[in-house]
Amino acid sequence: MITKFDSLYAGHVDMDDIGYAGTAVNDRLFDNEHLASVYAKTDAIAKTMDANGFDTFWLAEHHFQPEGYECLPNVLMSAVHLAHITERLNIGCGFNIAPMWHPLRLAEDYATADILTGGRVIFGVGRGYHSREIESFGSPLFDQEGNRDLFEEQVDIIFKAFNEESFSHHGKNYTIPPSVPYRGYQLEEITLVPRPLRLPVECWQPIQSATPRGLDFMAKHGIRGIIGGGVAEGGAMHRVVEAFRDAYGRTGVDLELGENLSFGFHFYLSDSKEKATREAAALFEENLKMFGPLRLVRSLSEEQIEAMSDPKRAPTFDLPRIEGAVEAGGFLCGTPEEVIEHLKRVEEMYPGLDRVSVSQPVGTSEAIITEQLQWFAEEVMPAFGAKIAEPVPGDD
Image 1 (tube, rainbow, N blue to C red):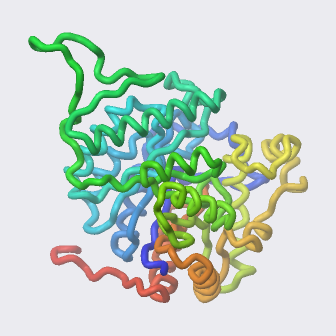
Image 2 (tube, helix red, strand yellow):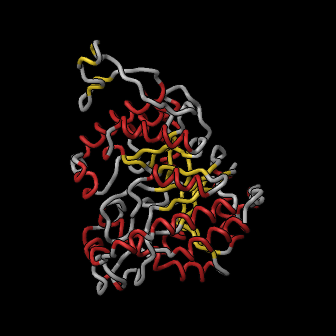
C-alpha cells in the first residue's frame, strides 16, 4: 500500500527556451550568480514539501555543470541545511556517487549528518554516469567493469565502517588501515568516529541496468532500490521488480512484489490529460535532450541523439514525444483523478510497494514545481491516506 510520497530534484536552475526547438544543451552557459540560485530554489521546494506532507526530498550529487542542469555538488551539506529550515521532511541522498569519494570520508560525512539532523537524512549511493564528473575525480567510468569493481569495494567499506566498532579491509583498491606505526603500536584496525547513531543505516540505490550482479550486491547489503524518474524511464518495469525480489530471495529474504522499492514518475497536473500533456511537452523534451546523449535512454539511436542536439532538426525529426511516455505510464499527465486512478492500479499490481516519487523534469521552473507539488499534495495524496501536515507551533 502506498503511504509515502517523495520528490526528486537534481538541482537544475530556472531556464528559458526549453524543448527540442530550444537552446542546445551544450550551448547553455549561466553565470555563477544564476548557478548559485539553485540553493534558494532548493529551499523553496523543500519548504513546500514540508508544509504539504511529503516524506522525503531526494537530492542528486553532481559537479562541473555550467549548463545549469545539475548544480548541487554536496548533498550531505545541503541536507543538513534543509533539515534546519524544515520541520519534518526527510532529505534523501539520491545519490552520493561513491567513485567520487573516499569511502571513509563518505561514511564520516553521512554519520555527521545523521547526528546533526536527528536521523532525517537517508543514505543513498550510485555509480555515476557523467564522464566529466567521474573521470575528473580520477575514477573510471568508461571502464565500466573497473567502475563497478570500485563501487562495490567502496560500499563494502562503508558498511563495515557503519556496522563494526573497528575494522580492517584489504582489497583491490584500498588497504584500510595502512600498516604503519602509530603512537607506539602497529596500526591494524580503524574506527569511524563518529558512527551513525541510527543502525542499521537505511540505504538506497538507483536501479538502471538491473544486472544479476548489481541486484545481488544490493540484496547482500539490504540496499533498497529506486526505479524510474530522473534519468530513467518513469514507472515500474515489471521484469526489474521481479528480478529485485528474486535477488533478495537468493539471500533467504522473502519480499512482496514492490517491497523495498520506490517507483519514480514525472508528473504534470492540469484540467485535462490533453492540456497537461501539451503544457509538459517542452519539459519532457528538455529532459531527454540532457540525458539522451549520456546513453541513459537505450532506445535512442545514434542518429536520434545527433539530431537532438540541433534545435533546427530536432522539432521535426523522429524523436520520442511526451505522448508516448504518457501512454507508457512513466509520465503522469492529467487531472488529479486520472493520476489517482493510475497510481491505484500500480498499488494493486505491487502489494509490497509503499513509496513513490513524483517529480518534474529538468528545465522546470521553481514556480511550476512548487505549484505542482502543492496541487498533488492537496488532491492526490489524500486518496492514499496522506494528510497535509498541521502547522507546527511557532510556524508563520
